Amino acid sequence: MTISKKQRTKLKCEVCGQSYFSWTDLNGEVDCQNCGMTYQILREIDGRKPPFTTLKTEWINALREYHNETKNRCRMGHYLGAYGGMVEEQNSFLKWIDTHHPELKRDN
Image 1 (cartoon, rainbow, N blue to C red):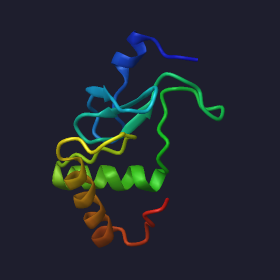
Image 2: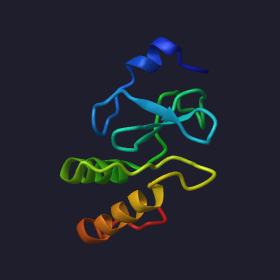
Image 3: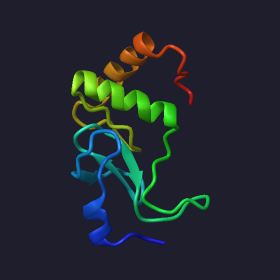
């Protein structure tokens, strides 16, 4: 199952509410260019129909809190390499997680 171009343009990020997405390096996955939240938009996986995210709820909530507080992006998608600023984004987010949500384990 795939979603149409019309449906994709109506997709709004559940973290920041924006609608500007770009492809990651994983087939069918896009990430929000404002906050970094990822969505699978082209195919059904494990019975879940697109669009959906593979992040657990507690990480979605933490990303929303991080973005609201800092206005920084943290690309959460699957990439074959580190694109400009990605490592810094992820390190900043993980440092913030350690301070604000130490109960979240990084391997989740």
